[in-house]
Amino acid sequence: MERLDEQVAIVTGASRGIGRAVAKELAEHGAAVVVNYYQSQEAADSMVEELTGKGCRAIAVRANVGDPDDVKALVETTINEFERIDILVNNAGVNRDRSLRRMTAEEWQEVINTDLNSAFYCTSAVISHMIERNYGRIINMSSIIGQMGNVGQSNYAAAKAGLIAFTKSAAQELARYNITVNAMCPGFIETDMVVALADEVKEALISRIPLGRFGQPEEVATFIRYLVTEGDWITGQQFNPNGGMYM
Image 1 (tube, rainbow, N blue to C red):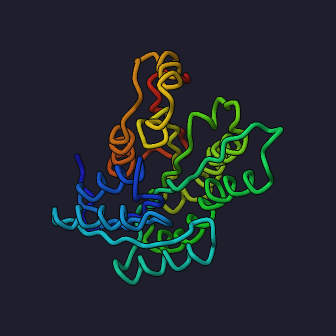
Image 2: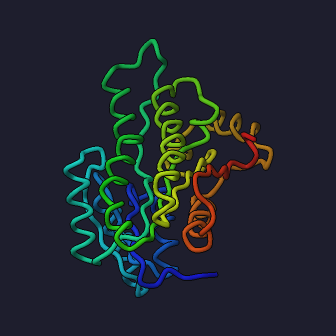
């Protein structure tokens, strides 16, 4: 298993859930990690405290990754602190579930901006630094919903499907610079959002998963760690840790 010593990773939306697990996984394998958050400062600071207590290098940086100016400041802070950027995990996302008949323009736009536009803002902000070093690893956090759709999630599905297409195009453009771009499409992972569902809803979801359980954030994180440490010849792909729910 290769390590990430001397490499620097930005993980957006890293204060909780999958993002938190990814930040921890990369840090524990040697990377300096920028824990990006927007609202959950206490959780982000706790994550940094946990990592630095283990001897890892980590800082928390507040930024709304749906705002290009905030993203620019996030990248500048990273360069000032660590002098390079090797890994970008575009994980930040929100959901505003509602049927098409009732969805507002604001609910549509917020999800598209946070879940899709942010990946463009962050990627475009870091690639000059990666190109300069002729190296980079970019992971975009899509979703099973972007592949199969879901009732009440047309905004979320559109954003996550857009990430898959963005991944394929970016991978083709950036391969010449030894920058790989891949998408993760997790199924239902046991995060706060899933835990908060009613028991009957969780039971219905599990009944649709051949492996019979929700995934764990750490299972997605270890997959991402593999891609950035040993996936040198993998780019433009979508990976599906979903328990067999969508094949």
